[in-house]
Length: 68
View: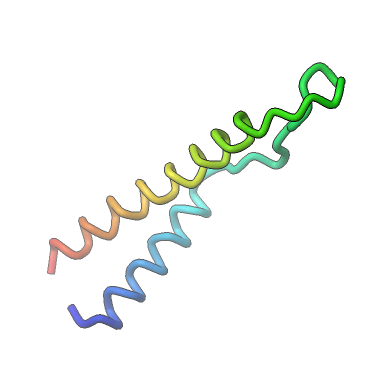
């Protein structure tokens, strides 16, 4: 595989993985409606979402690359 093939494969698989997963529409940063900011929960939700997409894409990239 050439560098361009790998770049295209990575881009394609990341896009597919993103489309295949449901993403949070809102991140709640208040607790009990009292304006208490909880950045940790927001960060953890975002991190989990990103890692699911990256894991799925990486798995597909490796499967595809090892076939060739």
